[in-house]
Length: 129
Image (cartoon, rainbow, N blue to C red):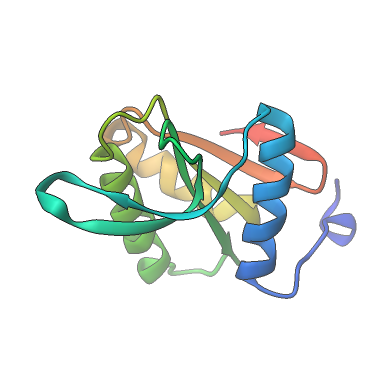
């Protein structure tokens, strides 16, 4: 899709809801925003979680900017949190709006992302990053 035809949602929350519906249908599970208990009893809410916690993910709807330090810090935080989710068989992040944000982050930090899958969702197209 070209940038002009890329679907846009009103905000990140609308994208999260769309991603939940899309991925639930694609993977044959029900994903919704749920809290997950991490080691040490810390509870964190993730956007895309199955009821049994076997699949845990988060959605990010970011626009690319020249110096995305705050966005990169947030991505790193969620990768680290996802890596610490106990008993999950699948841990992932799905991005929307601008693929360049995730692509730039991964070009620098992919080696630190063990166990976390990355996707870009553009309308009906899910791309593995």
